Image 1 (cartoon, rainbow, N blue to C red):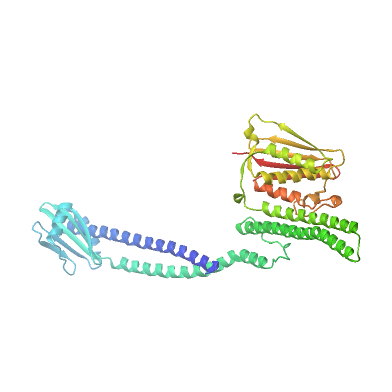
Image 2 (image 1 turned 90 degrees about the vertical axis):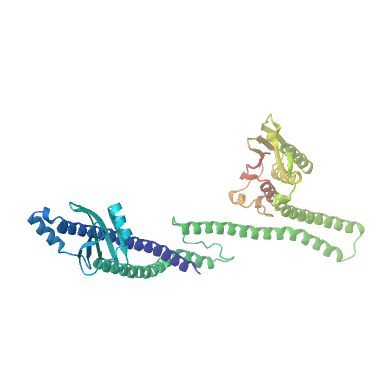
Length: 456
């Protein structure tokens, strides 16, 4: 069942229930009001009969004529009976006879008033005090006219319900079509978007309703997908280039060496060149494996309490060994008295790889004789490391791609590297529920900030 049919049925069902409850309420309220009103009419008829035929000697001639005229306006199928103390009928008015059980007569004497109904005929019994004693007056009639009107009301309510239900079905179908039109348009536009058309966006994202919110959310998802596809294409292009370069060099060296016989020294040189290129390939492979390893679920990686500052000093020492000409200075902005504020939960080897890559990048891209500064700041709920260099820097367009694996800025392509360090560091930091930010200015330098939550 599609949404349009479901909406129509739900809308019709709700309206039908409301209309049924309204019709039932109107019908039964009218019926109840008619019943009580007719009981009052029967009570009035009983009182009139008692006045006319029992107290006629106590009223004036004018009142007598007035009551007699009123009495002549009888109810449909009216029967009035007057009983004495012995429960015998002393007077009867109307065609026919009504049988009343003695128990009912005794109840009227006890309660002074009683109203009941048998079939369509209604009865009212009252006690009337006279100088000659107490009498029972029972008046009965059938409310023919009002019952006919009640029957007409029932037919009108049923016909009105069926007509209104038909109208609601038709209008509900049209309403659901109108309500679902924006969604159908969104579906139509989504079907036109493929992997090669990720630049397309939904046109329903400018309003304030739920469909616009859905379209806006979908457009944001498309932005992320387009960015991810661009990063993937860039990754494939750069990775292919990085892998092709050493392979091409190895193949070239081997082809040249096999063109003719060479002396042992030449073969040794070729083997050393091939070994260097093989080591380069090994480093590339290790970097790719590390990126894959850093993409694992944090729940599958062993974490333990660590002193973050100790990892920083280990990484800086290793960076100095790899970059002998570098100058790295580590300082604290606010050394806490409580060492627990320097503790974090993490994987030592992964954090060491991330920090080492950041320090090594800062050393490689710094100008000669320039220091790399690392500043550790302990805060209430997190630890922050800022690594600053005074190197070549990057443009704003370059900053948008620094976390794409194997991507390298144009101004550092003459420096050895593969574009793996920062993407790997980012994955490791995010694996530890941290954050990494890079700020850079061309020809001024770069600042990398790492924020890690403290051990809770």
